[in-house]
Length: 146
Image 1 (tube, rainbow, N blue to C red):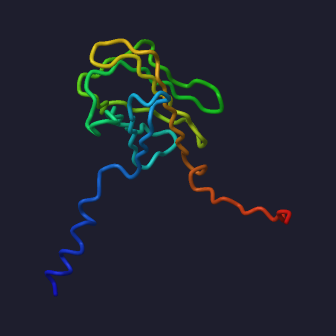
Image 2: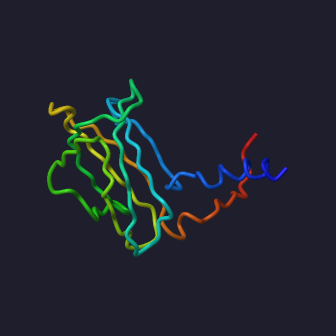
């Protein structure tokens, strides 16, 4: 019986390091982009690993030239000044401090694959930070017609 209990508890200790992730295709579908994040807290650096995925093979796509822009309410808070290259197809060192609670847009533009320029392809992730993420949706009292 104890052995069975231990087997049932093992998955609890093997939970991935990141609490949340989103994977979306670029606007032209050439790449899938995955962004992961743990508990995002206002005023603290948040690690945001990003992975570029080949949608045909579902494997990490190496050698990507990219740009990152972070905005809140239409105001750009961060933008890489130039294209950046990742040889591994994974960005592990990207961190950002979200200054206040709210909805943030992280746009990732890809402009090169395997050292070959491509027309810019973009994907935008929406991330709720702080109390904004904890707000329950309030049902409407309006009656629909019918």
